[in-house]
Image (cartoon, rainbow, N blue to C red; front, top):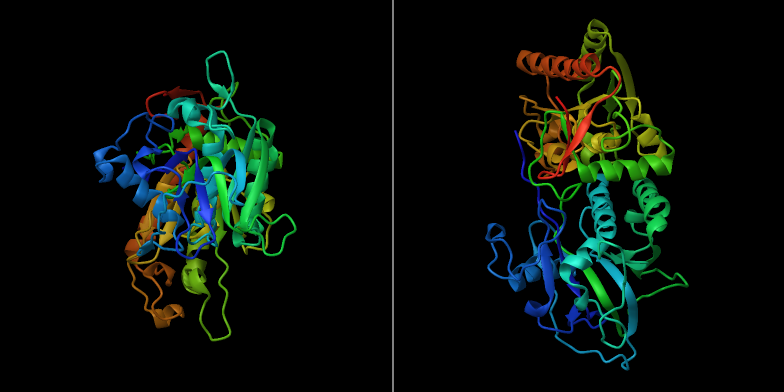
Length: 475
């Protein structure tokens, strides 16, 4: 089974301005169809062409750019309604009081749902990927599109293979420094990716459109303009550059490995990943049960997704079943609860010793993306909530199993606020069918780990498939 993954859309503009005027917020200096825009594919990140693949539903670069990039910078955006900004093809000459960013700048929209670590983690992965690929991007886009302050072609140093050398970049967030994007788990991830990895490669400066009184504020007064803007658009799931996602636990996306290595380095986690010298590490023969942390509000409802949980009876059955099956197979069982109070480092290291992660669908499973590749993951979802987040999102090279509960619990039974989505209700695994299927999935996941250990006792040999950009086990 495979799942299609949304692509990342981004554009390069040599003259991009954001205005404080209430009438418009997006001001490219040239008509949209003269800007350079691309949609990522399965081969690296960009293709040099003036039109977009028709499978995306657009017949021109301008049409794609408007909907997939420009509209993502509107004042309001959610999955059901997009309010696009007005586009004014105004030319700034540099003498109108505008503030100019001369170095290459990655411009990040204020995406929705960033309180959710799945969505904020996906954004961090996107920025990390684009920043890493900047030299390739600029070479493929054409360096003549990158200009200096005088409008001339920017002078780059070049490597022996003619790839440009980028030394200085800005990352500009269209949000506040005090937003949830820069707190808790997400702040830890950004610090790992930028502070420990990207800063080894570039001189990076971070800017926020709204600084909330910060003395280094770059809040808009007239207009902020960017000489060379790499403008992010349509968001995608965690890990770009993959359209087909394998779920058998025998291959892993190259980008996922690079992302993992960056975090491991930052947190001091030891181990050999696919593509590195030697054999890749085996996933531990340990099952980790990641429990959710239900939080009751003052009005008697469970807060948001915390209503998505097992009942006490089902939780007791599930835990007992795991103890029985791990004992029968000779595996270890590790039961823990993610409360949200743990630091990013604590959460990631908690899963460092887990080879097979199981639990109810939710943020408690997001850290599976940092586990050793070729392990396993089982998520259990409520009835009617077929959310393929962790197959289409993490793409972490894990054998993937999903069970949708057969019992439909009401809002009242779940004690969740009215009009909450199906996925925020009790996970009912009361039937014989549910329990037999879950037991079988647990056995199958452990067999996967055991067979790897029996066949590759000294470590896992891998090779990079240059067509799919995935590391595959040599079988």
